Length: 413
Ligand code: ASP
Ligand code: MG
Image 1: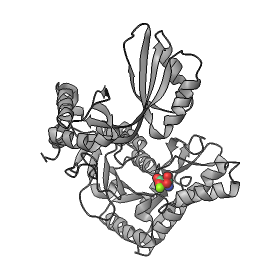
Image 2: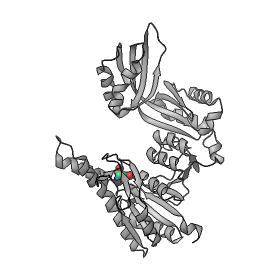
Image 3: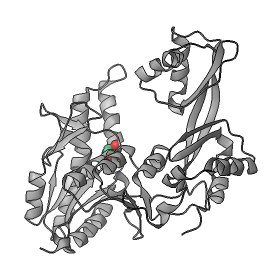
C-alpha cells in the first residue's frame, strides 16, 4: 500500500454545509474525489441546518412551560439530527458508485461519561471503523453523540461535532482533521470589523485557543483535544476551493514567528464593581464562590490596593450572566461591602501571539496604539501569550483597527 493509501483523513462538515439535499450531493462528490485519490476517509457531519434547534423547540412544546424535558430522552432525540445527515450522506455517496457506510456514535465505538447534554468522550473503540475502511468504504460517523456505560445515548454539547471529528482523528492517528465550514479559515481578526483582516495560513494550538475562546469560530474544546493529541486541524470553506488555515503545534514557520498573530474581539462583556469591600483574607473567595457555584465564569478580575481598610473589587462576566452575577454578589452574606453596581457594557480586545513570550514592549506598543486612536482602557489583563484590554463597546472598531495596524497584521510575510 502506498503511504497515501494507508493514511486516514477525518473530515467534518457543519450544519450549514449539509442543510439541503443539494449541498449534501455536492459534498458527497468532494468526499468521493478524496477517497478515489487514495485516502481512507472518515467523515463526521452535524445535523442539517437548524434541525437541532428545531428538535429542542419540539421537546419544549410537548412538555409545556412548567416541566423541562428529561435529559436522557433529550439526548436520544437530539442524536437523531446527526443520524439524518449521516445516513443521507452515505446514500448520496452510494449514488456516485462509491461504497460508504454511516455509523451512529454508538456503532462507531464512541463511549462517553453519563453527563447527558454535555458528555465527555471516554474512549473510542475503532475496530468497526477500521474494518469498514479496510473493506474500501468511506465511513460517515454521526457527530456529537456517543454511548454511556449503561448503554444510553449521550450528546456532547452544542457545537460538539468538531469534538467528535478531532477525537476520531486522534483515535485513528489520522494524518489530519479537516473542518469544513461556512468561513474559509481563521483571520488575523474579525473581517467584519477590520476590513484589512487577513487569512492566516497557519496558527498554533495555544494561539487558536485564545482566539477561539475570544470569538474566532471554532469550538475551543476540540482545539484543546487536538493540542493534547497533536492532531493537525485544517479549517476551510466547504464550497469555495481556497486554502484554509492549518492549526498545528509543529515548528513555527513563517507566520508563527510573528510576535502577534491576531487580534481577538469579544463584545459580550459586562463589568461588576464592588466598592468599599472589607480588606481581609477570604474576601475574593467569598464574593466569587457563589458565582462559581452557579456556573458563571468570571474573567478579568482587578482588586485595588487597600485604602482605609477597604478596597474596590471589579470583575467582568459574559453579558448573558451579568444580572445573575450582580444578584449573587448582593445576596452573599460572607463579605461586607458598601455597594455593588453594574459597571456597564464593555468589550474585550486582545493581542494574541506566542512570540510575545520572549520579547518586551508589546504592552507598550498596544497601549500607545490605543491612545493614538483615542481609546480609553478600562481594565488590563495578561497571560503569557495574550494582552487584553477592556474598552467601551463603541471603541471596539477603532481599537481593533489601530492594533491591526500597529502590529502590521495586514502584511503577509
Ligand atoms: N447539531 C449539534 C448542534 O447544533 C452539534 C453540532 O452542530 O456540532 O449543536
Ligand atoms: Mg449545529
